[in-house]
Length: 190
Image 1 (cartoon, rainbow, N blue to C red):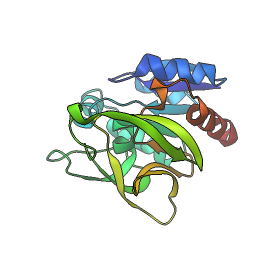
Image 2: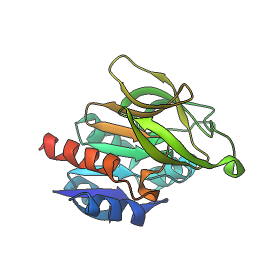
Image 3: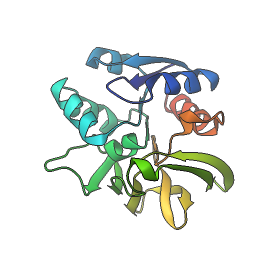
Image 4: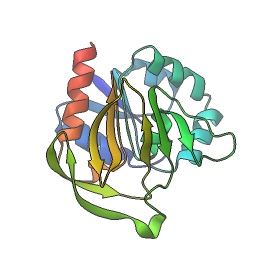
């Protein structure tokens, strides 16, 4: 099993390390052939409009959409959550996503870069030390979306089928439970 980490921007190395510590073989992927050869895909944090524009420039937007719609497991953290959302609130004009999760994500919902923070949240009913950097939140989750985590009433972690998304950066902590969950989702899809 190989999990690709979309290497257009963001915490690529950190996700690769977290996945490997969770029992997967992980590698950065940039080309469509590399993504197609992977069993799952991580879309790291970064800046969602930059991810969208780079995905479009590298002609990955529609092919990755089709892979996700076809059942490829994917996990998005922070901007990756935005990229997996079917709708974006406060998006840049014309902003597009890979989609797949029936939700509306609000960009920079917790504030600007200077408003970034860390705190304990509940994910799956258990405490998790979360790192929020210009983080989004989920404003609307559809009926088939499982809410896995909330912070002060704001949805910060969701799952829909083979898709997982967090508003925070689990790759920046030593806690591997989120990555372990995704690895188990990829194994379960094979």
